[in-house]
Length: 220
Image (cartoon, helix red, strand yellow):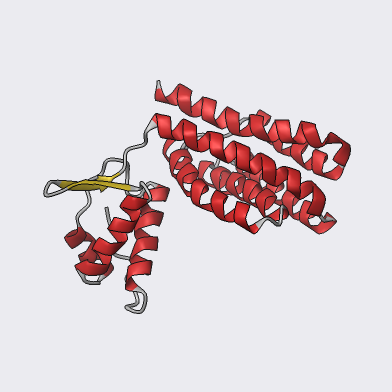
């Protein structure tokens, strides 16, 4: 573990510490079940232990860290039951976002969505797992923004932090298959031809479910 490149400006130390540690957990730099110490983190980030402890308490409340008093603090393990629960909520909420996106979608937004998907296709062709995950997340995030439902976007942003952590852990070397590209294309086609709304929503659900199935197969 080495976070030395992330020296913090003292103005908003607690929030900055929170964001840096959380990002390290989500990306997998701080791996599940890795023991972490406030002293070590404070030295690496160049700030006192108090904002580090406050950030760690906040991350514990959010389920990214677990601790046992007077014993240890560690990055939360990935619990497969929680994985299933998180995916089921995200599938339901993003399906709603897609339905609302049909009302608000503009040609320029559809063009942006297609451009993101082209980058995703290129990443697959390059066998770049990191970029594949990046553009897949961006694709789904753009659909949520197209819904113009700010409350829905807030809920999904928090949930997807957990999804990104899960997928970074399971898919850090995995390259999506052609099926994933086809599903993205079908969602775009549905948004362009509104009579295919139901098919597009079903495809979105299947796209998420395929990721979940891959995780469950990896976990066996």
